[in-house]
Image (cartoon, rainbow, N blue to C red; front, side, top):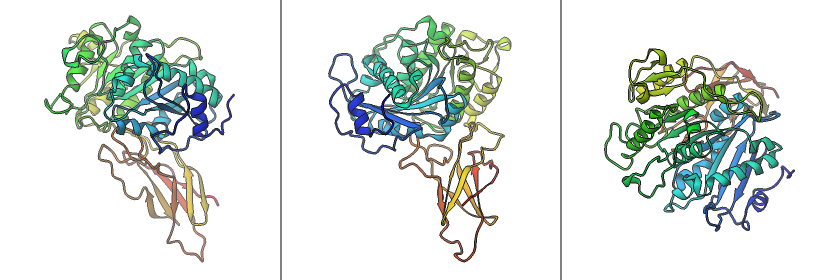
Length: 447
């Protein structure tokens, strides 16, 4: 097995089909265990991936064997591609992965700004094969060879939605569920999308839960502009899949255009429900089918009902997996205010070294992490981060980029008390706060 102390360059040499080069994306968060990274150079062979790509994966600490891989796939363009560099470091998505003993993987395709995005976001153009090669290499690197064979749960934004949907159609027996933010694959020839090659819909793909998640300003309430074609494409894809009995839903973000906004609070809950039903009890067994029933709602409606009580045309209705998700969905499509009634986990390993506090913390599965409150001698003296700005949704501890990934540099769980009295001993406590404002238990610092 490969050494875990390889540098990124060494990993590139071993993983690349071509001689290693300096990566043009030169700001990488370090990939030290439980993070691992492989990078492949562009291929010049017909049918293979024409862009360099790196895959970063997080393995839940202590996992004996992972049960699946959750993939967080960025969209098209250089900015979105670079945002993928931090996807595996997202604490909220790690909480989902950890609950189901899954790895969290984020690709970063090194696509020049004006290059043809279809050359990676259509998985038939080499990215499917590169992804699977990456999983095998990451399995060898991390000591988890099962990465090459376990199921996938896919989340994709824009071109990443096209990729995730395409992977469902190519590999329906491997995909537990797929959330398609703004982008969807094409199922039949369309003159307005003439450059995109249509996929076919195998019967097995109809059993894979899918969720289309466009922003309302992408052609629903705003009918013109750069992204006006997103909703017609989503509607066409939904209609074709649902008419054949596919398990597909639509959750229109009522606040946004192409940016991801607050979708993670719905996406994480939906994927949680799908993984609970679909992941096999033992590795190597087939994916299980979703539980019978489900809930249905009119397309672009705001209320759902149990399938047995739904009076509309079921072949045109939005499908939702269960009553809890139907309730969250009803809140999301109205104002994205998906709620949470439980506090986040308390910080752990809180330590004081001189005047610096450090700690560890898990994110709240339902609502993530907003910030941490710092107490000295029972009085609040600060919070981390001190100033929170998120133009795309609720303020998050790690910040939020356009494509739903943490900002760089990654925020550290650390606080320096510059106003402490040098002549006395102080006691400190750290409190985690989720994005609906609920506080965790207080954890005292140890020296």
